[in-house]
Length: 319
Image 1 (cartoon, rainbow, N blue to C red):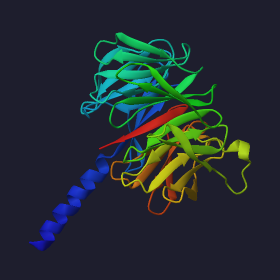
Image 2 (cartoon, rainbow, N blue to C red; image 1 turned 60 degrees about the vertical axis):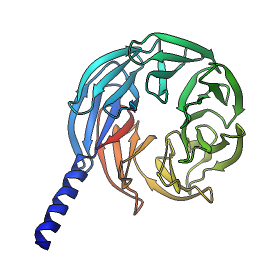
Image 3 (cartoon, one colour; image 1 turned 135 degrees about the horizontal axis):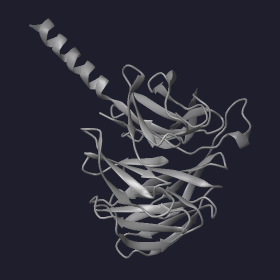
Image 4 (cartoon, rainbow, N blue to C red; image 1 turned 135 degrees about the vertical axis):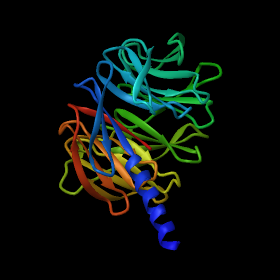
């Protein structure tokens, strides 16, 4: 009986592991490549709209929204069937987006307009537009849904917008060319990657100010080649991960000490990072080697680089 139960548990464990799939957007192929993290091989391709880049799972957990820069749309994909179920207009040149807490609205960075645009997630109707700095990029909604943070590549700032009033509350100076953001699990801090500053800014959400800057260094690499963009963090808030761009590495940061503790060699131009739901694997999108590198988190070792579509932008890992 015990052996049978153990065998059943191992079988279930194997099923859970095989179900973890990285969905990778490929800018030049207008498609999403699916990579099975157990077999470490391509498991399928989904055609989508033109130049898919930023992706995010809707709060209902059932749909994946894919922002396509050249189409000015989000392709809405049903995760279970892996089929498109609709398109939502996002305006010209949408860069990145996040959902409102209730999932009814999308906050989109409109690069050409220099604005944060609020769009109805169902109809695609524009609800509001707030001017921010030139070339807005990353967008992140606070866990309580009250604030939206937007990075500006040109202004070197993080802009804070109040979701209730739709007003710009504050402009927070960050490092040179801030890109992407991640919150600590308690929502108290916002970590921001600074692509041309080889650093990560830590913003106090309470004070709306930078309280610390982590400088990134890599033995044998020039500072100008360390170009961080992607960020991820474990659910316990102990470890953060940062892609190091042209330095071709991903870094592990101890959150408490704010120190870079480990680095892993991956592909060319490590652009974005995605953590698997069980937090055992990190998927790094390598924009210049047309692959993703699967990293074992516990050992901090690269397991395999899997070829995907041309110019992979980012990955989302789903069960």
